[in-house]
Length: 454
Image: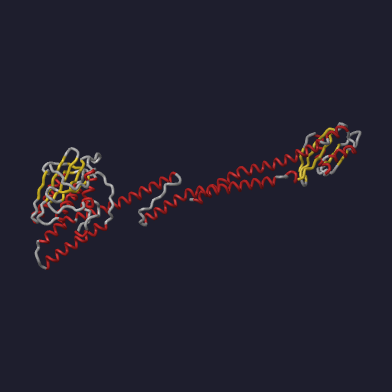
């Protein structure tokens, strides 16, 4: 691209130089010829006063000798013969007699090509009423004097213009090519997996637009990869719900090789799922506002599932506020995942026989979901809601409550952990009904005291 621009500029400049230099060189040559002939005219005119006075040889020879051309033997004079006087020839004639007689007969100046230059013939009247012809020889050197120098100067100027145009085209091409090379290099690095590569928006407008489009594309690729990794971690975390059921069921199998193998397989599977969750990239990507669902219906459905497990572990379960429809701007699958994460934590981190409850409180602006238990509570509520800060020693990845937090924040709400009236932990999920106007009180995100119930 760079050399193509240089070649184009060189061709255009060469055509312009030729278009102007060739006619200008011809004009210079013509001007030099006209200047030499004008000088010859002046030399011939210098003889005219003497011819008007006398036609004698001796005075005319002196007049011819006093001129510059006469001193160089480049002026010749012929007076035709008359009835009273013979013809007079002075100097060395370079043209034939016929040309001299023709000029004298017609009385018109003429230029005749002769060996080594031109001969200017200028008729002039003399005192004897005859027409004399003054011949001035103009050598080729005078006709072309200064032409070669002028042509060399024109060639130098043209060459200088072409060199300048090449230099300017090279600089312009460099400015255009450098952003394109950066863009190509960045695309190559992005293809090799360097997701942090970006291109500075510089250069011509088209390349700036291409750089902006590339940066937007790279950001979108990063966002899509983060969303994919986030989804992998969340889906892996959702597997913990059936794994919890399997683990609880294997506890009632009793002793024996088959039971031990089943429990070992479930434990191994749970460790693999935990490993998938831990190795997934822990970055959150922006998501669109979901269509919404009936929170009461989702709570009734998930409580029906967990109540069966609670019965096996002799846990008391209470549900309140889920008897009437409660719309929230959260997808059903997301809300179900958040409930499973909170209830799974109850089964995972509280001993068997610990009671728990799920309450729903709704208003015109927001819906609050409370999950309470009678267990030991949460030692560090602030760390519990931060992604990846769970207690790995107890089988926690720290992603469960982060799923709950993201669901709440997608509506403009939040999550708070405190002490429940049952004596254990209480997780409050605030879901704003209109995500565009969040109504969640942010100051209560890490409140440690008990949360009042309706």
